[in-house]
Amino acid sequence: MQEIPPNQVVTDKFPVMSIGDTPHVDKENFSLRVFGEVDNEISISWKDLTSYPMISITTDFHCVTGWSRINDTWEGIRLSLVLDKVKPKGHFVMLHSADGYSTNIPIEYAMMERSILALKFNGNPLRPEHGGPVRALIPYLYGWKSAKWIVGIEVMRDNIPGFWERRGYHMLGDPWKEQRYAEKYDLLSIINIRKRRK
View 1 (cartoon, rainbow, N blue to C red):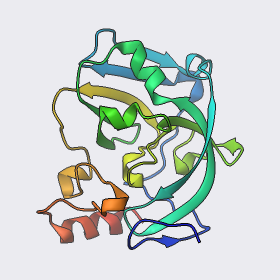
View 2: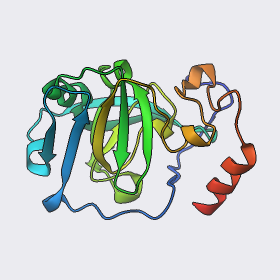
View 3: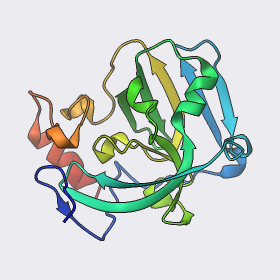
């Protein structure tokens, strides 16, 4: 049996985990802004995004709430290709979503080989409830770091917390180290937010 991180349970389901309703992201008017501590800020249209070379990766997905999916195939664009275009000068990245969600990651994780902007899942276009038309996939970290409905990538000098990190989640989120929560967090606040998004 394949090894999974501590206190995770393998499932065939793909639960929808979002902070609110699924936003409608129109490909025709799509714009991915890459900005912040960079030499060359850019905005990428859907046509430009899909002109990047696509790669396929088979990987696991681990949610901080305790479930894991094993050996799914994702297709997309290496995040490093997009970041290389802007010549980043910071050490961290904030991923911004169309629904107002955000999450921070060290830039070295964004530059890793299997960190992608995902457009397809198991051979099909990524469904809206799972972040389509494009979401981040950072398979080295818990799933909340793989922000859905990406519309902005902000390069930062400092490690500023995103949506869940401000509410007590860990600043990194390595599932193998079980970095679910920060040392100090308000568990009741986290539970109440989870209830509201169901």
